[in-house]
Length: 260
Image 1 (cartoon, one colour):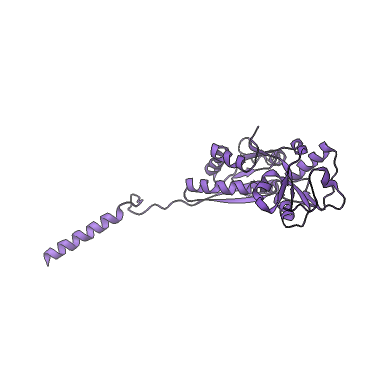
Image 2 (cartoon, helix red, strand yellow):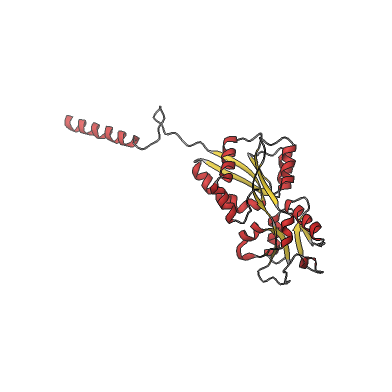
């Protein structure tokens, strides 16, 4: 019986020892859980595809971290921040809406331009209106959709109109570039002015038409850490990823231009 007791005790000690191998234990002998953190990024709607792709890389490199994105028109995001919304990072589709945030004293440091974007014409895949140029968008009876003037893609549209001397007569002005794209892809509109990157991201749901006048309205895409960021270290790490060669490759493949 005594021999059996000694053997049983030895087996128990061995089991306990093995259970401790390979586990993350603190000084008290308990495992150390990974701290859960949330990074909040307010980003222009045109960033949705690329940022969602980079999210996988970031969260893999920062265990326990989840990114919460707020994708919308830059003007809407700037307004939300000025009204007290909480975020770590702000990304605008142009300099003007970034200036709204920096002028309000909400930025921690100077914004950095990481990419550029420019307009293209989006039409349904079969292009029923036969659009081939910017001038075609002024045709009577055309169901054209653009961004509202306060939205970066709308401001770019106005610049293109002024530079080309072509007056457009849209049937709708949307609050985000993704809304314009949606109306074209569903056939609610004959054409829309959106960013080249949005057309690439939309795949076969729309057809893109480049036009030379778009070079008159190239938008910068700036990013900045916010002063009251709940997770400033993670926010800076996200900015670093966006600026990194890996991040820049993702933007280039999506059709963004290089920062100048």
